Image (cartoon, rainbow, N blue to C red; front, top):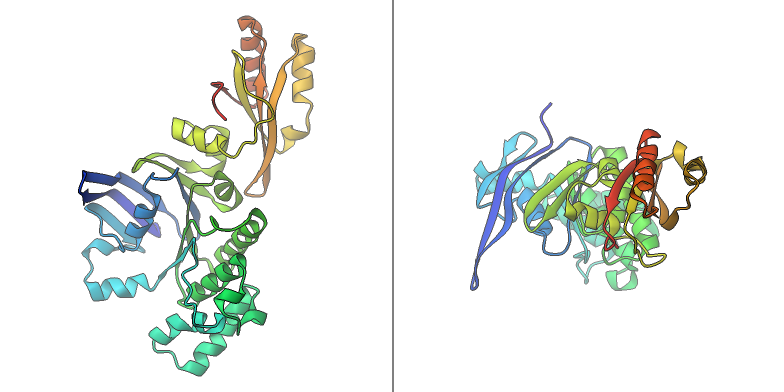
Length: 336
């Protein structure tokens, strides 16, 4: 079956006073129908340019973007407008019409599509109910919290009956609790309406919360792609490691010659792995950091261990951990 989104050799260059800027460098990836796909990178990685190329708000300098089998770069303006109606978008700053109530904001795309007012209002109320905001139908954006505004924006997108939802840093302006609730809502919409979701973010926690697969961007280039679990357990590139480690609150300054990051899954998180390691080699190890995360409903844990300076013992410990199927990689002392 053809992917819902297929990007091939996409390049985007901007001409500025200071010269040519390459915001996207030869990027290729595909997203399957019904998937929640994360695109992650630090500020300036080219995420927002890439997402705007997916619906051709930015026209790629070269390369192709296929959505549902259609090459968007070959369509006329009229055909492109029709295809864009199937691609909804939510943003960091909600982009609501301040002079309209929540209900009228949700009605807006239906009005543009020529749906009669009474029918549009009826449907808009249903969409507000889906996002848990029917009691705020007559409130104006200024009377709503950030999380409520984002819910109205999501209801407005649903009113266009999209096949794809692009989320451009959609939770960046929200507190952690509200972020969790909005991500849960996006997950429900993906599940209940089979809408393919693309999440653009700089936060690893967002990707871990809802995404199936993830692509890592660095300075306009795609440096790593795979499942979220693969990225968490074994980030291959420096940029991916930086992102995986970025959410960490340091327990103590990480110093020492042999530091290893150990990752483990649900079952092994209940076993006394470190105690067994210490007992086996009769040498203490220092736990500098430990945490568990929920990835796709599974507990995934990580620890940073400071191993003994005796190389032979440290090497044996690393082999021991690998033998019991722990993810093990050596890290430098500046990972935090």
